[in-house]
Each structure stands twice: as structure tokens, then as C-alpha cells.
Amino acid sequence: MSVTGLDAGTAKVTANPRRLRLSPLQWVGVFLGAVLVLSVLRVVTGANDVDSSGLLIAAFGLAVPIALAGLGGLWSERAGVVNIGLEGMMILGTWGAGFLGYHLGPWWGLVGAVIGGAVGGLIHAIATVTFGVDHIVSGVALNIVALGFAKYLSVRFFSTLPGGGPTQSPPLEELPTISIPGLSDALGDLEQQHIFFISDLAGVLRAFCTNVSVVTILAVLLFIATAYILWRSAFGLRLRSVGESPVAAESLGVNVLRYKFVAVLVSGGLAGLGGGFLALVAANVFRDGQTGGRGYIGLAAMIFGNWRPGGLMAGSVLFGYTDAAQLRGGGTTVHAFLLLLAVLLIGIGIWQILRKGRTVQGIIGIVVGAVVGTWYALTDIVPPELSSTLPYVTTLLVLAFAAQRLRMPAADGQIYRKGEGH
Image: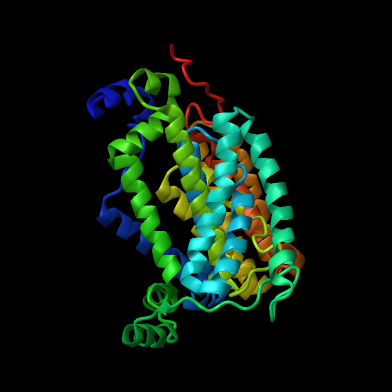
């Protein structure tokens, strides 16, 4: 079978002529525009931490495990298999990182994380691809089983080790981080001067060259590799065709079940690596309940990103950023974001009415934006009980207003039996 034939057979389901494509120069413009918005927000509200290098470094650390889980979900769902089990695969990844990380070192800990997640992917693949179990049922069951299995393994293998216990591993060695000493220090000095836009840009750039974990760099490379493999290679074209129309793909000679199986295995490995980041980088120890629902958040980030790597990365950074803001700045920084959120909601509402003709959605956006703006004007700080919900509220609002442009793979979640196309 030729790649040309497959391309002709799947052109209708894979083409998306309306998708916006930005040139590298335009992406730079978007980046500078975002920095300018944060700079204006800092000056207007006086919240100097909204774009500080410290907050952004923390945001990247919070975004990486979510991004890796979401990337795993993207691989699976592009092949037509819904992966609600990302949380369970991350849990197995954290335990694998703790076990091999303690016995063989942190680099082997990453291998253990991938293996642990891949085991979860294997279970999900056997259930959904081989036996045709409902994808949601299999994923939920995997999450429950993985949680209990990790607790059992912790009691069995960590309880007798020095520094370990039934709910955690002994302390783990740290993985290296990378900084550019001269550049990092110079940008830090410029950031402290609080010059409009210049200091803000320096703070953002400093976050990219200060204490960057090797796993963060690996995650970026995995995003680039995923974009190339799935959208620039014959293998990726076949895999995506399986998620769009498995009957058409099989009629052109594609082994549908094999591609689904491989995709779910890769999905598990990536989610496990996200769990490994939590154990080896974020905490340097495995702990029970360490994932904290990040597998589900990664799934939401993948949906926000419209099942594409670039959008997924943006969604992950958005959640990590808002989470870091409420953790570092508390109610003061979150209060500053109320103003930005109000302006964005009102702007989206006006755009919905004038450009899309969606009057109801537009009015809702304007009303919610006005309420948020009033909240900002009448208060000086957001209570801690509410500020901790900022990441989740932001994610829900973005998903609500972005839902109209989302397009999942056409055959996502469908149970497929070999030979259905004949």
C-alpha cells in the first residue's frame, strides 16, 4: 500500500483548511504581545509577581506533568481510543520512578516511570482494542486499580527501607538542571529594575534559562517529535486515519488494531513519564496520591488544545501558570488576574456577537466579565479559599468558550472489530 493512496483515501477526514497557521515571525509577535499584556497588568494592578521569573519557573514545573499526560492522551485519542486512564498511568509512573530511582539512580527512575505508565497502557490497550471493552469503563477501572496497586507495592517494597514507608519511597537523587549563569544573572538584574515591558521581557526570558530541568527539555523535544511523527510522517498519517475512519484505513491495508495498540502503549509511557517528573523533579520522592488528579487535567488540556500538540502545550502552561500564581502570590496576585479575566470575557463576548453572530453566548460572556470586573473593583484581595480554585475556574471558562471550535477525531471512542470494513 502506498502512502499516496492512503492520503487520497483519508483526505476528507484529515484535512482542516480553516485551521489557523502562524509563521515563526507571527508566533514571536504573539509572544511579545502576551508579555506586553502582562506588563500592563503589572503596572495597573501593582502585582509585580504576575510575570516574574520565579512565578514562571514554578509554572513550568507545574505544567510539565500535565503536558506529558495530555500528550499521552493525544496519541491515544488520535488513534481513536479514549484514554480516561491517564491518571492511573501517571500513578504507576510515579511508583516506577520511585522504585528504580532509589535502587539504580534518577536516570533509571525515568525509565521506570515510562515502564510503569506503559504497563497501564498495555492493560488499557488489551481491554479496549483486543476485547472491545468500553473505553470509559476501562479507563475508570484502570485509575482505581492503579491507585490500589501502587499502595500495595509501596507497603511491600518501601516499608522496610531507610527513609521509606507504606505511603512513600526513600528520598531520591536529583536530576540535573541547566542554567546559563551569565545570561541568567544579567536578566535577573534587569528584571529587578521594573522597567515597563523591558523588565517583564527579561523576567520571562530568565525563566527559560534558569534551573531548567532536563525532563522539561525532554518534554519539549517529545512535543516536537510528536508533531513531526503524527503530521509529517507516513506512520502518523496512518495512525490518524485509524482515529478518523478505521474502516477506510483497513480497506487501504492499514492494520488498525496494531496502530491502536501502539498508540495506547505510547500514551501510557508518556503519562508515566509525567508521573516520573512529579517523583524525581517536583518532590525527589514518591508519595501516595502524588498525581493529585493531573491526569484528568491533562485530558482537559488536550481537549482545550483541540487534539493538537501546540494547543495542548498552551493549555498546560495556562493551567500551570494560574496554579503557580495562586500558590506563590496568594490572593493578591489572583486579585490582579480578576481584571485581566474581566477584560478577556467582555472582549470574547463582544467578538461572539459582532463576528460570530452568537448573541446569547456573547451576552453571557459580557455579563460574567462585568461581574468579575465588579468583584475586582470592590475588593483588594481574593480569599485563599477562592484563590485556590483559580486554575480550575480558568480551565472551565476557557473550555466553555473554546468548545465551539473543537473537533475530536471522528472515530474517537468507537469500539472497532477487525474486518468491519469487509
